[in-house]
Image (cartoon, rainbow, N blue to C red):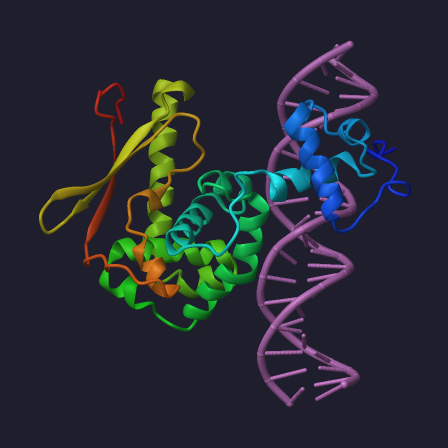
Amino acid sequence: MGRAPCCDKAKVKRGPWSPEEDQVLRNHIEKNGTGGNWIAFPRKAGLNRCGKSCRLRWLNYLRPDVKRGGFTGEEDDIICSLYIQLGSRWSIIASHLRGRTDNDVKNYWNTKLKKKLMATYPATQTPAAAVDSEANCIVMDTVCSAIDEHERHQSYSTTFSRSSSLMTEQREVRSKISEQEGPAASSSTVTVEDRRSSSRIGYDSWPAGEDDILLTEFVDMGWISELLGTPREAAPPISCSFSASEPADGQLSS
DNA sequence: AACCGCACCAACCGCACAACG
DNA sequence: ACGTTGTGCGGTTGGTGCGGT
């Protein structure tokens, strides 16, 4: 037996909210707050709506800090970058964008951003950015696998196998550290160096408890802006070497 | 003017998980 | 420890508007 529904769907109003309903909901929250119980909320507020519907309406539309209007190039970058790292964790992605809701971000990705990227990088095309910079190679590979794990990743797997092997390598290092030091100590750091100058251009730690390393933290995501038609200064071609290393405090042995 | 297809986005649905008794 | 309930989330649907024919 499944769980009981949160409300009687035959009795509550559904569909688009009227301005009057919006006003009732807004007024009640301004005076009393949400009350900490959305199921009971519509009865208290005098709305003939499902509690979940009230919650959604407030969070996605009526909240005073909800930002309306088009997404900026900077927001595009953030969404792409986080999607690469996290996948469709829309609530987390939205939390990095002031005033945007998970529903907004999800709709924007599904209707616009994904199509833009797919159109810019058909499976048969070798991205110029990838030729110039290994850093961008890695990002591109991850984008492809994130957008379409089967077709795209296979298309690029030969050219960009580096990122896959790198991820595997990182997991193996972490696994070894865990074996030696225990799960609590299973953290490491990763540096990215410019081979020409041997200078460090990227750095991140890999804290215990994190499932995956966030490689894209290191690389300039500006190329995504270029793809999407919001140009910014192009990153110079850089050769990168990735290596797992001990944290600065040297507590761990590899 | 009417129709059609498409894009957009608000809203819904169902599931997983957390909180609580 | 377990069952119940509320919340949050991601996937999906359906209404609306707009452009093309």
